[in-house]
Image (cartoon, rainbow, N blue to C red; front, side, top):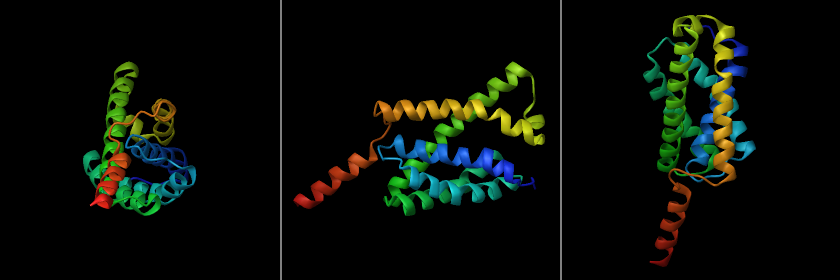
Length: 166
């Protein structure tokens, strides 16, 4: 079982949770309000830290984190559970792909093994900073140019209009 430190929660899990939630909402057409994202992050980051503290396979951590994010997004963003599931899944997939490619690049370019990074708390915090900056830039670009992958919000509105007309 890994040790959960306040620094790890503040500088690793809170930004990571905020990025996943914001990515999830923006890439599915929902507005990512600061208050909502902050609430989800403050509640979700410690839960995710506890989940990650169990030395599970990385994929199992993600599978356990997905329902937590779905419930938090459903409750605080007031969207349907199916829409929240798609949004959370999409956000975790994008974050996972980015993290995998980034980690692969870091290990190949620097020669530092993943085990060394995970064993050193300072390295664990510092290695993630460029990845978070990259994801923040992607979020800013998507928000500025209204880029979405699946516009669930608009699909739900169309469905509501069709139901109303019947």
